[in-house]
Length: 254
Image 1: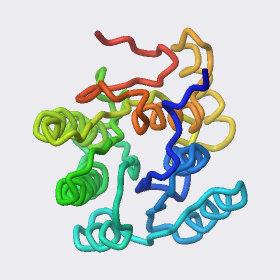
Image 2: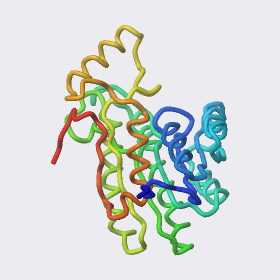
Image 3: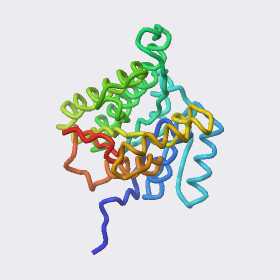
Image 4: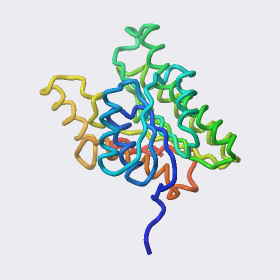
């Protein structure tokens, strides 16, 4: 018997952060599963590259240039996208620095992208789903940084912890309307955001991370994208308020 749980034919997805990394991999995979994918990012060149990857493989994609920290821009893009069944709120930025070095500007910038950007997308897409009376799946992007002390990552880990709480709260509030809300908390994934060092230092950093994983490697964007696909699909129809951790076993919280 054919497996149909991952078939997204006829469905529409909105993916933020789609210009690169996990967002791009998620957009490409959702399109490969049959969804029409609305790719959103402020990096217009990266968006066009993602669009080309999807359409070149026979998929359907549209692009929305926007800043996720601007509620009006997010709302306008969601309205333009029309009926949506899936949200993958992936857009995020990294900040490193000790607690004592953290400035108001650092905190405001990271919270604006990594928390408010997720909140705005969830609010706008959920309102659209409720108006239609349609079921749906909202997928947020947390981080393995919420599972352990993360020296040097105060702003980032605090914003991602807020995303976890947002996910649980929304899952409780939207469940009666058949809207599922789940989070993905990746471990170290090789993306442009994690490439913060020169080649030699980057290699040492990744080797250290790989030693923490029973699988002995760092993650790839596609590893996370498959988790996003699972949460977007009917294969996870009885799953909400959960945090899935594609992290190679680097942490194993109960």
